Length: 158
Image 1 (spheres, rainbow, N blue to C red):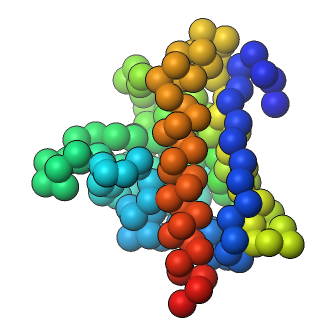
Image 2 (image 1 turned 120 degrees about the vertical axis):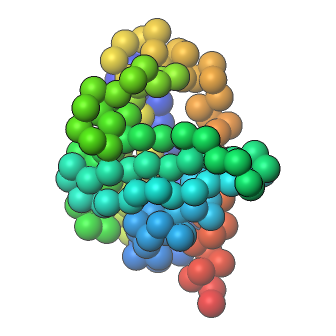
């Protein structure tokens, strides 16, 4: 972690790691927590393997969906790590300029209370990191992590 280039968040999710992993890798589950509420998410492609597509759309009214993320997975280690980037789109072409170009590493580890869930988001330079932080990284990614936790914890308690 380079504090000049990277942003991080972590939390303990009170659900088994397999449940949290499934919430990330099942399109219908991901759609329920991936964007900050009250916005809604539509998952167009979720090919969770290295080189696979990660494409989502966003709606504020639940009717009209606009592009949200067009990315690709760089690495996937079952139940342990997901790495994706929006610098390359889902067709392996250089991406059109995104609000913030980044590579995100999501890790999942066992914890006595459930799952140790960590997000590391890498940026090319300090200006991109600062811009992402100014856009609301902590609130946005933090609220989404909270929504993931609530979803996984509800799922685990069934």
